[in-house]
Amino acid sequence: MSNDRTVGGARREYERVADALRHEIEGGNIAVGEQLPTHAELVDRFDVSRATVQKAIKALESKGYVESAQGKGVFARDWRKFVAAHANGNATETAVGAGSVELDDAIAEAFEADDITIDAYCLTAESLNAAIVQQIKRIIRGEIRPSSIHLRLLLPRTDVRLAFPRNVDDPDDERPMERLSSLSSAHIRALRNLENLAGQGAVPEVKVEVRLVPVTPLHKLYLINGDLALDGMYVVTDNVINVDDATIKIHDVLGVGAKLYPQPRERVELSQEWFDSLWTRLAKPA
Image 1 (tube, helix red, strand yellow):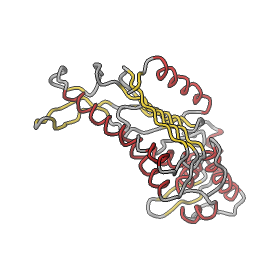
Image 2 (cartoon, rainbow, N blue to C red; image 1 turned 120 degrees about the vertical axis):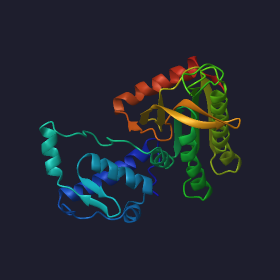
Image 3 (cartoon, one colour; image 1 turned 90 degrees about the vertical axis):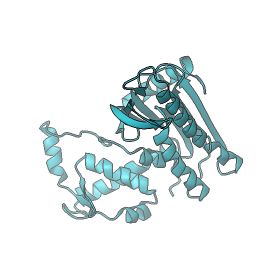
Image 4 (cartoon, rainbow, N blue to C red; image 1 turned 180 degrees about the horizontal axis):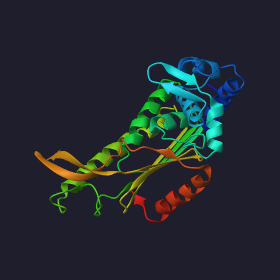
């Protein structure tokens, strides 16, 4: 892999790949309608991860340079038409990185940096845990060798009355909150497995901090390596769950399925300030 592993290095890597392909399309080396090399070929060519290639392709898609055909590949588009439409105010996507982002891809890319920092504000950390597990496996296999990992996780307190989860028919029913507490605790324990990497000598420095805040999260926020902020709104829905051998309907949110969108660079610092304010003033250690 590339040695460009400073904080924010992963972001520069995908931009490097996207810029190289963009120049080839603009120069006619990749003609309109021509299929781009496969993801595997691009991984070998640019010496980056598959996640980096995927993000580069998404960036090119958002600028009108390529389009993906399910099961067939990625093809060059007539980017001049996109630019013309944008000039006329008809473009629907206006920046590299527009559109939703998969958390798995963003975390995989973040773990290519030498020093990894992740601040997460969410309901249970289920999505984050799933993404981190894959990176732990990569580290154990020796695919990546970060020097440090620092994770700060901000979750809601479950000993206060939150807006959700809540029994639709009996708002005073404590079982939905007890279930939430159990789920959160399980994911916290799993994420603390990151610290085992330091004990095994796989990563020199690992720090996992968890704090709880008396606030119902209406959105989730991930601040990654100091230069990327992903934000997603929780959509409240009804969900049927089994507790104590009984089936109940609860007001719940679609956490795992929540779409994440990268914030403009100028808002990353503001989002970090917002997170830090909750972390230092309202949250308490778990």
